[in-house]
Length: 121
Image (cartoon, rainbow, N blue to C red; front, top):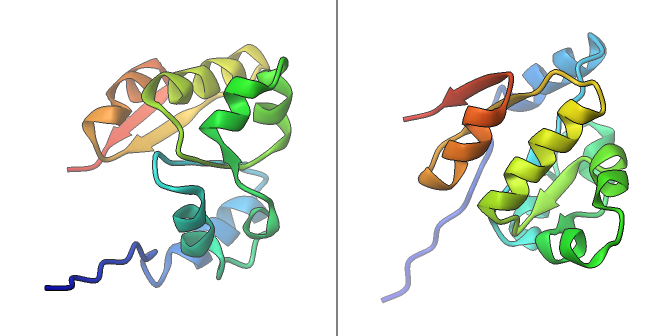
């Protein structure tokens, strides 16, 4: 038996994200999914981040200055729960207000740490 699954953005997601960006709201895609899956999911967005390379959790571990990657990059894949917390904390330390939206148990701690946490059920 072969089962095919895909992660797709809602049809209006791109439009909503474009409106947020036009208002000066920056956002990041932080996922535990494989970087190739993350890339495919955001590929059709008409935003600069759709053309960025995906930073992996391994990249964050390997760099001596993860705060620089967190500050300058917008797309993260295969990120562990503790790294999601690290991303939220780093952005807050850089003076940003952080909203975190998550949909799984791996997102509980970063949602709790964020200035605004939204859990999807």
